[in-house]
Length: 330
Image 1 (cartoon, rainbow, N blue to C red):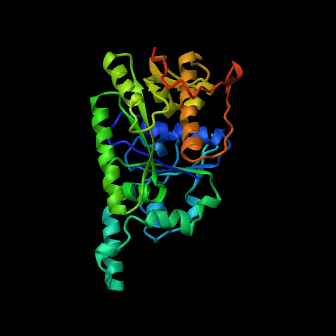
Image 2: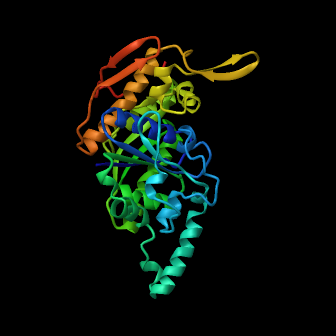
Image 3: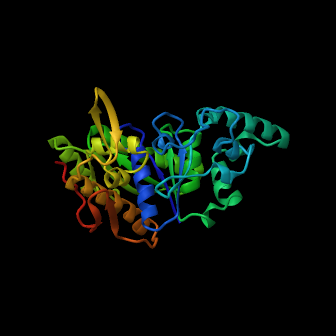
């Protein structure tokens, strides 16, 4: 089973859009896929897929209540289906108070059981919920988590539950620093959680045409420290359009979503976007990334063909090229 946390401590690395695109790519490959949004901030996976209409309602059932073993409904009712087939458990505002609520739970239960706080399994709660209580491995082929960026209880619970990271990084000095920090973070988590956490791959994202970007990209791709199966070029327009399409980059291209000015106002509609070869290449890179995760990290069987059905342009099958890492940035 594919279990991945898409994590980056720095912004602007397409963390959320990468989770969405990899999740949809895995679904297109024939794998039943669930995405879990553990990021309480606005502009998260939940917002992208227009899910979680009750995320601000303190009385609504949500994932935090189930993690803390105080649910207000059935777990299955938390799961929402998207128009692209992939399922999502949306974010909720309670995620922002997860640690304080967890501390209350720990204080109460350790007092009732005469247990030391140090012995309480605070990082194992999500693992127990997903695998032991809900047995999601019997329902899904792949589970992805988009976590918050801070190294605290939510991230540790996600890492303990899924055990594998995918790390988008900036092709710049800050990205290198984030990567060094990721090594330190993984080491600290492995020590504290007493488990092994795998790093599936590092993905340079937002790669532009500057010499600095190209040099850092080559450094990432040439290192033997980790796998770098693909690089994602700077496709701000494509990634931004995902929020208007309420779905993946695959949906943006197939439905041809575009934001433009009309009668003095900015509108976003399908059917207006030009079909650009460079954006098709980006979709191929995202599909190749999902393919690498599925087959190289987890040895899953997939449908390896990327098939697109582009509005007013018909169907197209895009050949994958696992040997070509670098995407054209023009």
